[in-house]
Length: 372
Image 1 (cartoon, rainbow, N blue to C red):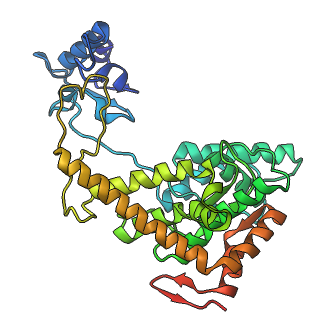
Image 2: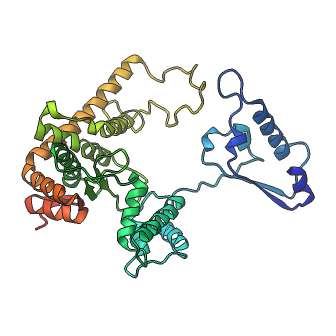
Image 3: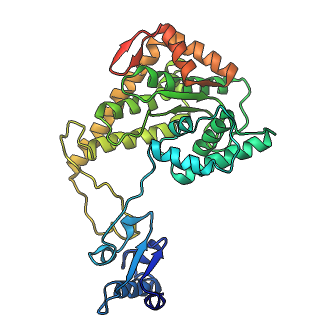
């Protein structure tokens, strides 16, 4: 490849998925892949050897820069790194405009509205979204893609394929209370993202779903926002406990509890948001190779590990008590919302907030104000 490049200089060489040959050497137990390491050694020699490859520029791409060999990233080799992050609102609008060129969109569709609904989506996600919407349009024998297809496609991309709704039963009512618990706590607690939709339609492994959509991407997250997210995630379990009793709580909160524990632990060990003080006790990146962590020692003592566990428990317990308090104080509106959810199977965020506002105060940015 380099010989052909020299013959055609000036020349660009582009290597996609450079981590396939550029992974760290000697990572793993009992030796590495000799052929791959030889390929990497030859690549390093060609890029910065005794002979200067004038007129040749090498460009590479990867989505795993953390596993690349340090020799590849030295000055003179891949020393200029360009990070391509997920697009912002303007970027998503431009990406959607490109992928919408060959699709027939209904007149009421706003590209900007779709972009606002999809924070965190990559370019591939947006292309997949419009393709799914086009498939749904064809199945429904419509002439053009409408917002109904766009909304269904967003749900499918985010949460998976739609399942068969449950028949009216005790199980369906319990799931309804669980989801309304998430939504009511997220709506009434300060600093939480607004609820977008509550549904009992199963998707993927979930029997019901509550979507919260931030107004726009957040680069930095405050301690109050993290605690609000933990409290909102515990709303489902809190609703089960208050309405059905401790003996009737289900496994439905398993994913919520895993997410909550991870967030609380990061608050203590990485962000210094606990009584332990401003300490970073765990590295941000986990071990990516099998043998990389065998000889490493713990970064803190057993006493500190015990205190970390206690701080994590205190944060979660504090948020859990907040969630229970909100459920207890708003039982009337919760019962009404559950009856409506069982009847309609889906409540959008605007309708949810309007019903909640009839009974209580809902947050408006920095303070609570009555909406009606």
